[in-house]
Image (tube, rainbow, N blue to C red):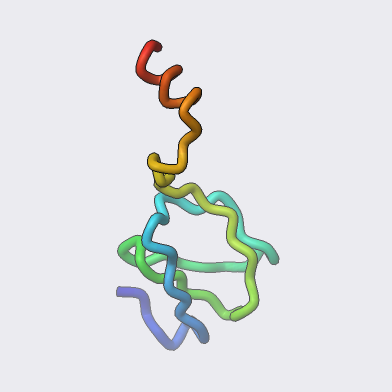
Length: 68
């Protein structure tokens, strides 16, 4: 577990989170157990990779995957 006095804020990551691509503003952060993001700023924009909901794929895309 990270040393908590180093960080002012703990932000919960979404359940579908896979990996972080970038954070704006560009600040130091730490991710612990893919559940929480520790940082010193509470107002951030995170661009991350996620697990898509396959039930929302359009039919033509599913057909393409089946026949590929």
